[in-house]
Length: 155
Image (tube, rainbow, N blue to C red):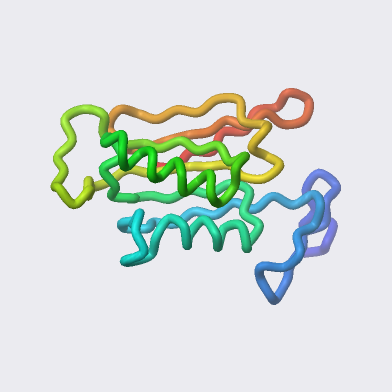
């Protein structure tokens, strides 16, 4: 296989032994993780720690599955929104959670749920976002060059 075989739309593939590396101007970084429970406090791996590390890694689109937060509760949703704004004021996010009859405990735990967000310069390209009523998926649509649309789904 030659370098020509590895090119895509005129761009050369790039590789770096140390990541995060300085990002090339045409690159786009996507990160997805199954968190198996996020925390809004400092007790365990918190959303603040995760978002700060995503900024350090220069992530453009982030996706987290199984956030296990009771985000149907307005107080929890506001805490999550505040954490997003602390990390990046321009970030756009969409949370998928069970809007039906959720079963939660007083601890703020609710199984399932997911989140997708766009940060940095790509946030202004967000055209639409959505989620299903059971919290199985959430999505964000970005508008690209020549009005091309790209859909990112966290499921």
